Image (cartoon, rainbow, N blue to C red):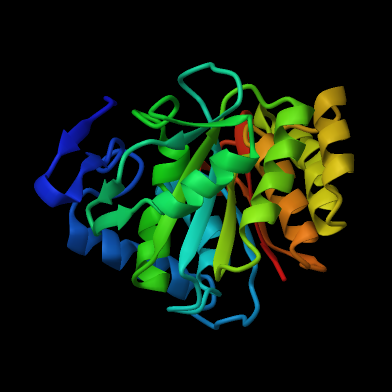
Length: 282
């Protein structure tokens, strides 16, 4: 997996797809069919009006795609002008939050423009956020959500945010800043996370139930405490905390858990699994 930044004329600086053909199909037709099939198998595109936020996993589609599809299939086409995707950094360590400093992300389904106005507005109110390529090069945790969003929403711009060190101060500050810049926009907030890693299936389900309970209760502070104390595990726990904090400030009132699964449900190997959760906020 490599970091690619290319200049393509008026398109500006475009981040090429880093995990196409690895985490999800690299062929556009196959990718579109795969997403349509997953959404259909999870109950179809039965749209739920009023969705304000999504929590969804970021593993390879073979493993977590159906769980993500359970939430993404509920989004209404054309309902949002901008989407904010908040993800963890798996490959680079840094302090604060990195807002991609280029102009677009590319997937096999086409390019998605970065909402540069929203990026500038967020940076102006959030000292913890900076325009940077840190955390965006080979990172999959933002990219894997885009084909789903492209398939269900149509045209939109987006703001990719990657949290480096997921401290409570950074996560809550980011959530409050997002709430400050989004009231006048038709925005969707997406938190990118997998849950526990490499426990037995039984142990994973017990650990993950703590996160699921906090998400269902719409309690970002309880979740941050459980993550800090080690009572819960989520590689994107900080993004979930930030997104839930913002959503509550923006007037969302509830979170509905859509699906929970582990990699063992796919592989049949229950000895060492990864947990996956999808949820919608209204």
